[in-house]
Length: 110
Image (spheres, rainbow, N blue to C red):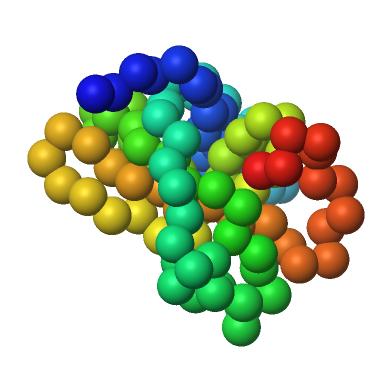
């Protein structure tokens, strides 16, 4: 049974724009807070992105209608990368990872 008692902030990539003078500027990224279900990670999933310099920190389930291919998120106050997306139909499972050298892990152990 799904509880939907946690949240994740999905972060879109900033949109670049050009001003009247022709200079390019990086816009702001959109932040969308959605409900999610935390999932248990398997050992294989946790080891899958080590070669990329990332440490898998969590996996969450979100509704497909809430997820628009964002590749970054904020979960439990930590900036993370969405490294793998699975699932179909109504739900998506997002595997979240942080850089190995990132020592800003919170006390909640994500």
